Amino acid sequence: MSRSVKTVVHIACDLGLIVVAGLLSILVRFEFTLPEQYLLIFIRKLPILASIRLICYYIFGMYNQLWRYASVNELVTIVEAGSVASVFDWLFLHLTFRTLSEYEGAFSEVIDKGEIFPVIMLHL
Image 1 (tube, rainbow, N blue to C red):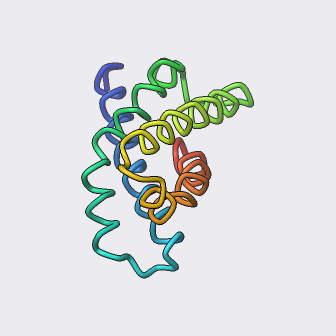
Image 2: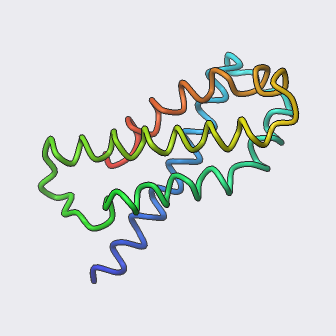
């Protein structure tokens, strides 16, 4: 398999895991009962949030590394990229919600959990 095909597969896997991690974060926030209004918010904002994460991962060079022999340096890269992406996620969500109460009600804790699940799930 060529390097470009492996990169596309890696990005597709990351995208799938980003979606699963986001849904899992919301489910944990609402104790596994998902109100429809928050699911609609998640679906509406998912393309931008996923793009933010994929761009951060690309900038940090996660698609240029040889993951077969991953070490502590790669783990540090994953945590750094996830942390920076979470900051940009928070900024995006904070700036796009109309009121602070809408933000607090929907995703205040999800952002905190949203940092944990992608780091655990990505690159396993």
